[in-house]
Image 1 (cartoon, rainbow, N blue to C red):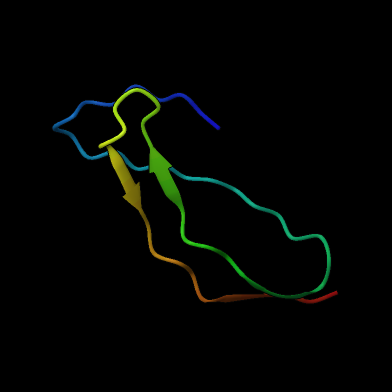
Image 2: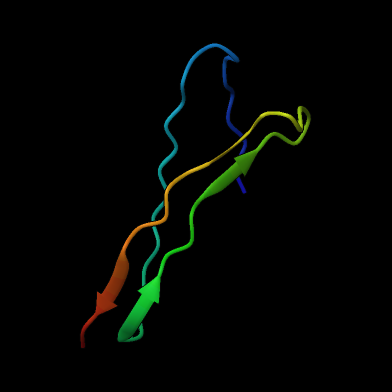
Length: 55
């Protein structure tokens, strides 16, 4: 969870970091954001390809 000041008329890029610590194949879900106070402000991103973590 994060709080970010945004302007309704300007695009915003949000970046997150995830770390897989167990070897395996993972599907990273698509990111989703929404405003707590303006529920009609929301967006979803594209899901990435499979992430393969090797030992």
